Length: 113
Image 1 (cartoon, helix red, strand yellow):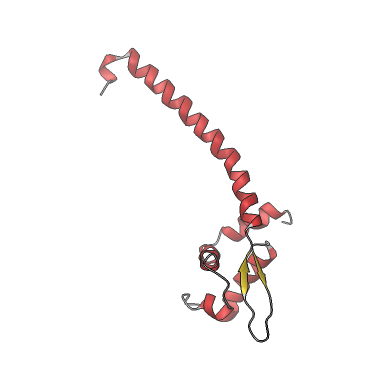
Image 2 (cartoon, rainbow, N blue to C red):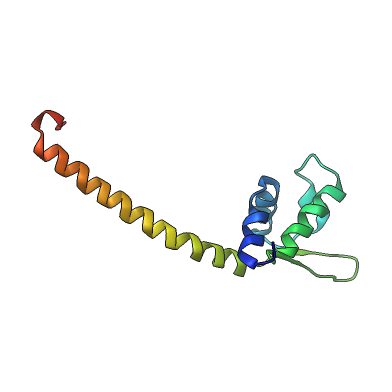
């Protein structure tokens, strides 16, 4: 799997990684800060961070001893764009279904509520 959208969705498939992204949406954080609410080892958290970094969802920098993680929004914007196309399709489909159901109810007085 090497295309950016697939990497993004694979990274988002895990609830721990989604929670990490939610934390980083509040601001940069160190691995220790990110790991604090989770009942897992630092190496396990680091593995999750590596997946997020590979997907381009976070970047890590180094400032002296502090290695903050930073949320990168571009891949999420791309994923949202892809999802939006399908949202429009489903919304249009539901609108057509609503119209059809309204026609059915108009034609059968027993089905009116």
